[in-house]
Amino acid sequence: MYLSGHDDERVTIQEPALNEIKKSRSCFRRTCCSGCGCLTIFLIAAAAGIWLFVPPEPKKLTTLPDTLPDDLPLYKRDAITGVTYLSADRKKRGPETVAILPKIIITPLIMGLDRFKEGSASTTPRLTPASLWNATRDAVKTPLATYRHTVVITWNALGAEPHFIDEWYQNEFKKQHFEIERAFTSSTARSMRFRNATTTGTIFIDDAPGTAGTDRVVMDVEYPS
Image 1: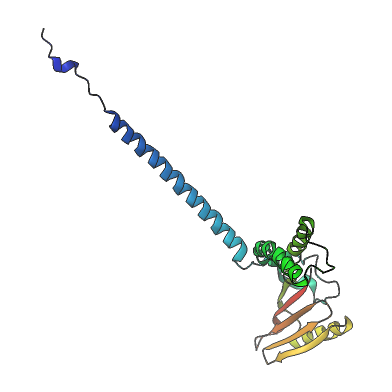
Image 2 (image 1 turned 180 degrees about the horizontal axis):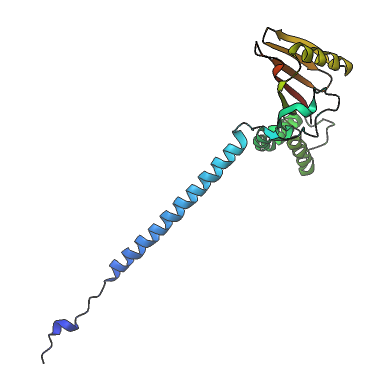
């Protein structure tokens, strides 16, 4: 039997072709890794941006927060229908976190400028790594502003008439040495502002005409942490 010499021929892939295949695979892997890395960085940055810059949402509570001032008058605690709470810590999280890096950069510069203005004859202690560290640490710990807790308390469908609730709060605030300022009064709504040395807030009494009792009372109060 005759076998053609062509049957024994083998196809040999030249070296340049193998190199091109390897390069293509390597480029593909790098592209995938680079794309995944960029996506991961983007997601982390987006999450950090939301965490820092989106205004905080108050929490809905089933009970009054423990931080509420003891001297705050509350009409019929057992009739409260809603409580929302936004803590001072939650308010300051975004701005204080963003301010850390500028504080770290600016504090040493300010100290250096102050030292330069005072001159070599100044009695101020010279700058050292320890003094810079202590000053920067204190700057980071010092808040940009005073943050306060905020609580909104709601009553719905109260049996008492609006004028009775209004007078009750006026009397109770005076007993607790709060200052009262009338915001407005109409046939369907009443509002007053109250304050003492630490606590401020407003009360809004809403009443639809032609219905018995009081439709809604809302107290919005702020106090220190």
